[in-house]
Image (cartoon, rainbow, N blue to C red; front, top):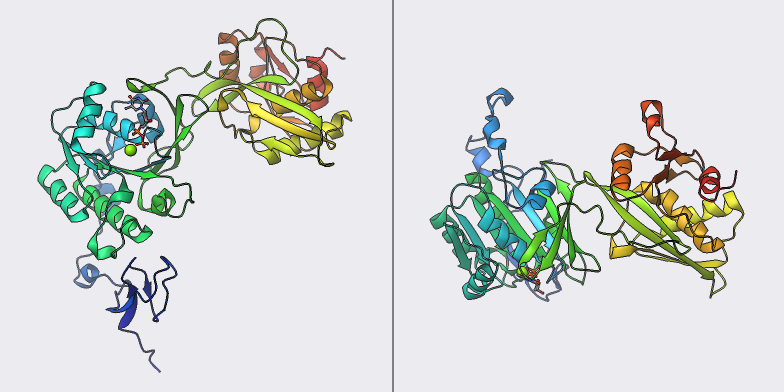
Length: 452
Ligand code: TYD
Ligand code: MG
């Protein structure tokens, strides 16, 4: 028996959610009595495909020029994008309010090395405010047009009129379209507007940046809901200081390992070209116990960071880890390995870990340095000066090999560290004098404290 297909479904008049059955309350936006009958949108076969317009082409016939990149005029942004913007690239820029998204976008629009015009669609600031900021930052560009408003159809009209090659939408959460329900600011509204704008940009080969706030309430209503619509997802993060980090979490046109570093100042965001020394605390003479310097590989650069540890007898009878810059699980695991290998007790201690300068560390290569900082904190014995430590630790206490050891070594030497304690060199790498290799934690600690 042929299955009966529904021709009617129900759509929420507030947020646009579609359901096969009538519901009293919308599960998406919580509105009561908002479902109205609506003809089914047949998503399986698009009207265009039905009309026989589906297009395909041989791979060999694709023009690689389409993949040409153009610079944003900001090297740190280009680095994170994978070497500049592609034609038709859709980029989502997320970050907390006030972190500098609008500033970065205005700088990119004014400095971008694209031919053609640029359009700044702003639903948050007036034209006067944008002009004031541009003047204060000394930014000007021939063919930089503004559209200030939040109506999607008007924004699309402006796009048609300007035909820009680079577009910024600031922010995508402020736009609304009637087709996507009556309540502005819903996830449906945001997705619908983003899709329309990205479609426009892709069809014309323009690069488009969608700015989105990360809201405190959670990630669902924020940029997360848009990540699948774009080619590249960038997040702006703040450290404890005026530094700002830009990271890609998704990139169809490059790696997601790069890190862009900026400093927010009176002249807007300034790039930090050589960050190796940014997080290093310069100390004269002896180090205090609980401190260890590690060269970490971020993107294609090495940064020297200071890991600080403190242990105190547990207040609540069992050990707790307080660490927000290095994953607490990693700290707990490292402490357990240390306890097993050295017999020094951590299970009755509260452990505090910090990274000077507020940088978040996720690289496995910090584990040996973390172990040394913890050992030093618990034993009260300071590490020798001018020594940096790196290496991954196995649960059995072995020091596992790390990538980019030569780069790490160079960075340490450049900043006056005469010794890098790490995994054992293999093959040709063994020629470096400053590099001391040890293959387990016990041997590494013995080397640091001069115990044979
Ligand atoms: P903004 O780019 O408006 O942030 P977002 O768009 O992410 O909300 O930047 C806002 C903050 O940056 C604001 O607190 C002021 C500061 N700022 C500076 O310190 N110097 C500058 O030159 C500019 C333009 C902003
Ligand atoms: Mg803004």
